[in-house]
Image (cartoon, rainbow, N blue to C red; front, top):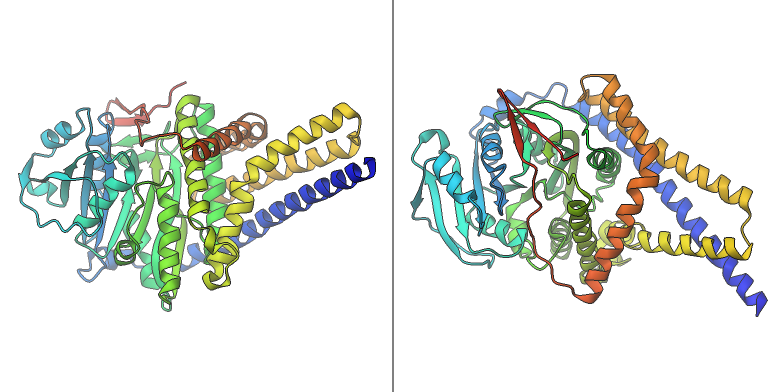
Amino acid sequence: MYGIWEILMQAYEQSVFVYGMTLLFTYAVLAILSMLAVRAYARRNRYYQEDILMGSPLAPGITVLAPAFNEGLTIIYNVRSLLTLNYSRYEIIIINDGSTDDTLAQLISEFELEPIEFAYNARIQTKPVRKFYKSSNPAYAKLMVIDKVNGKSKADAVNAGINAAAFDYFLCSDVDCILHKDTMQELIKPVIQEKKKRVIAVGATLRLANSCEFDEGVMVRMRPPKNLLARFQEVEYIRSFVLGKMGWSVLNAVPNVSGGLGMFDKEVAIKCGGYDHASFGEDMELITRMCRYALDNQIDYAIKYIPKTLCWTEGPASVKIFMRQRTRWARGLAQLMFAHFKMFLNPRYKRMGLIVVPYNFFFELIAPIIEVTGIIYYIVMAVLGYINWPFALLLLAFVYTYSVMITTVAIVWDQLTFRYYKTWKEVGLLCLTPFLEFLLYHPLVVFFSLRGYYYFLTGKKSTWGNMQRQGFKQKAKTVTAQSAA
């Protein structure tokens, strides 16, 4: 019996070791691919004539969709930000998803909106649409507001916007996001530059608006968040977008395009059924179904990512709101894996089935479970006296140093390439954050992920909900996104 127990212990430890080394190797490969991709992006766009694209009437049309539910604190500043976008052919559709605050009233008053008749074709089923609004002021001619019954999900709201969209591509964002003025011309570049494949989605880097300065909806000064929780998220976003997704883009194996900023092929999105209103990870779920549809219909597709920061979003500044967000994300990932497990290691689905889905399963879905069971296992082994402490501490130091190094490389590489922060002091302070991330932030992410899995398994009800934005505080002529201390 003792011999069997010893064999099981050895097998478990070896499996965890192989798992960990595979993950670390994957991060290293993605980092190298990402650096090559960022350099290629900078070189390719150095002489790109953006003025020609911006002014051309032949440029592909883009519909900007922004769902809003109880966003009264930020709605006006964010819509004004959308109205500052530089592009020749675009429209903005704000979908008021049955807000119970003054979101709609503010929009009507600020932008001089009036009800209109609109030929609405519900190709994707949603909750009923009440009214369509357009402005009587020519300055806001590109803006339309849809007022609909609350669908209890962002997906239902965005689907209503897709139904009303006039152009072939739609850009999905959130009204708590501030977009760079050149967002659309940056996102459309990969579509124009790609000669062989059909680009069905394009994403870009997101950053936190917390502590940044804005003037009339335009970001004028970028700063690392002062709030520690928000700063952890900033570091996580830089690592995820600059290293992770850029690396996957090289392999044409991007796992998802963020719901905060993503541009999609409207035809493919509609034919695969639009956003799933029952999903808690609607952005990743849509990308998976779009890829699945393309593969089932022999469409040679591509999903592109660009490293430039084009979107700033207000991150949760309290643990309570952060818990809601990450619980929802984890529950959405579990839903996704369950719904599309048929693609797992299925060669019919090529990179999606052989790379993306297995990676999401092994290194995203079950990673928190392996981490917690590993901690419990080593606590038991320590109590029983089976731990080789010198080796265990050496391994822990290696993992800790490696994680800090990867994150620091992402921060420094991002700054060297794009110079987002004004001073290197700000960059240096941000580089100190990864030293605490492993000890303070990561345990929260793991715990909230397990909470999301529990909600998925038990079927606990949840809705889109109010994320309780801190809002944009007016300071003279500058608007600053303040995070709660």
